[in-house]
Length: 466
Image 1 (cartoon, rainbow, N blue to C red):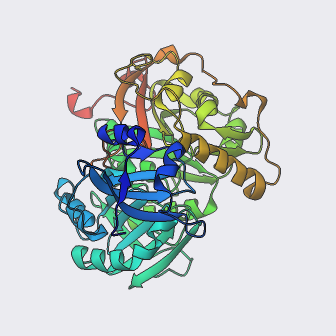
Image 2 (cartoon, rainbow, N blue to C red):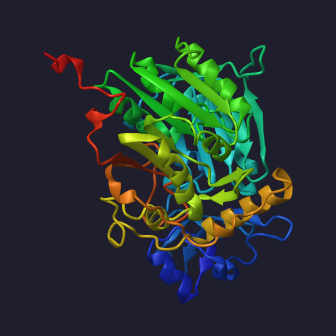
């Protein structure tokens, strides 16, 4: 990695002058000799012929785009130096001994295709390219020393493997659930770093969990319908504050349900009476609830990018989000609220907004607000890969609904207005001109036009009663 690649072609130099952080496949020939056919991933310093532009690049021919500029600094010595720069920025959030937070957010921290998260006493290193394999040992040693943690776990996202790597290990209880417990704002959560699909806790929802609680803070009681509820953290947080909230949580995973029940118990919340956990196909469950009188004051809709429904086939949020919302709307009380989330690593913001056509306050058509009009090549490739994986291995009888093609907007959304926009928290850093670092969480708080205090379950603050 010591000998730099010297660029002489005007086209690539013009791109570097713009301080871009990714380059498409048409620039691969400028890196000829950097990687071999047997090892198509590599790191290398680069420079222009006059030495006016220097930096470090990650080159991986299996990715699209294949070229990732790590940094334009002239004084980069090693990977740990970049890590050290990032660790010095951690004063922006709570990093107590049992906290969970992100240390490295890919290119946002100058380390593309690398994610480092802290969960209490343990560190998870997630690599999205094989190029990082040779650095895991040195990074683990460095991070354990600098952060004072007990052990590291390695998630090889590109290969679908999670394993313990260095130092101590966490244990499991008699029910096969992890004993690794972290805390966020005094609330306990179960974390499993060996579950490749999910740790059981989404770091990027830190602010939105608080927003759900704030919504209930001045109310005597209320109800939540939590769809694609994962481990039901949205439902648990307001209950820990002593608020009288009943919740109905639906997720396809029985494992997620078991973790949710354990988390409620860890926080001393009796769940038998006021909280239900349904391990079932969300679309199927909503259809079965059509003839009931169930209504909720708050609906939380946070689906994965691809939803496999036994009744509707595969639904993708890039063009079927509106359909999921349409199924949920009949269960909302007049004057209620909807927390609506989408993963913009797969769906452009304007595509999502168009599906919510009619909601007041959406910046549709505002060129200053919406930058991306089409999904990036990386986004489209991810979607094709996920569809292929689901069709070939995970779902034997998967089929696509006829309405999958083309965006489907939803009617009656003019009855809603946007109260708040949500983005990722401060530790999910980004940098300008870097399309490879996605703002993966985007969310909206939508309010039905009828006043909130007129709902059946929500009453005025008792302190104001005379």
